[in-house]
Length: 561
Image (cartoon, rainbow, N blue to C red):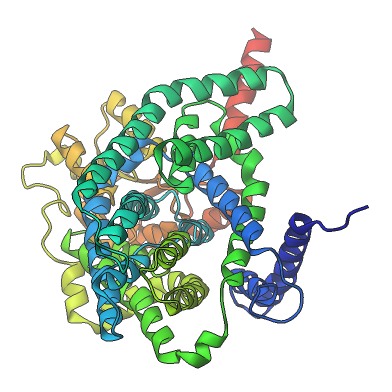
């Protein structure tokens, strides 16, 4: 029997060593992904001992990217993306330009060509999808406005990188070391790429959102859990692969849109649950594959270069993103969260430097520097996320500028002077205008009860005001936002946002401003619900419990009739 099984050996060594080192990292109070990255270094080609198949590991990592982005798409709608477009589109473009300029400046300082400098700078400008999503999920921010803004920002970056990857070969042919070919084909390539991406998006939104939910419906009618899971995984992987082969978009973007169209199915939540174990396992293999690309020798050969690249990624990109968010008049918390989200690089960076090296545009050391910067930035990214809240508090205590930015005049941060008096006293303050918040608002409106919405999404606030609904923009965990919603005279505070981290601060601020206000909160699990109920003396609605009670009442009423 032939025991040469590189696929099995790669999976066994990657997952086994990742489990061991991830466990040790967690016991040392370090992020588990540090252990996953170290596992990749140990089984990579640059360290002695067992060497896994790098090509197979990279393909397994791509499956992880597909499944992860598919899962995000299942929780995202086109409306979610459009709701953050005013932040994500200009923010991503400006941040990519600034980061590219910083990276290109380093490369020019090292004596590289202009084209090589531009490609190197671009490779430092785009964040990793996997790292971003894992960080947002670990902090419970994926479904918050800040989380949606970060994901929307990354979608814009992915679209831009698709264009860059398609344009690089003709650019290298025209301006690279083997240049001399005409540049007339460049505009044709740009036009063709835009047409391909446009056709792909149109097909997914027009045809896919009808076809694939219909397919999922018929598969579940068979009653086989295996077939249902197979349909979900096959849809994620095959649509991502087909999008890459037919339209030239990335695996990540193809899988993301696949999840978005399947979200139209009533079985989208079940699809997300069924694919979760596979997503987690293959996401670990992504980090292992990144570690396999790392050559530790670069730390000794060019330590200053590694530090400079890491500084551009962690510090330069973060500052650029934060400044853009603040200039667009979003809260300080949003600026810090988005900047932490983008302070790392990943899969697109590796693809771009690999392509640049194969086209003889980049020098050999470029890939080593990018991988070293990726390893270090990915390792410190969870720490940056945990530092967001302490940094915000420190800035507000120590910096007059931060306080000025935090409290600056903003027409959306306070109710208009012409607001009817019935919305300023004995009203309901509704925090969050997502799926749950919209249903509550509809019920209050139908009952003729006055309410004011507090929402971090400025576009939603603008739309609500245009519809005649009083609303203020800002984070309700900050007392200033609740003050503008006139919480001091409100009869009730309803917290409908999924952001569980800020609920306690919202409740504490509301109690200080109005000790008699009644507080109503949504929760996600029993332990959290009991803790909130004990701390806030309010009514806690647990999703599963309320569903069970509603179903029980219906069953009893029908059977008793």
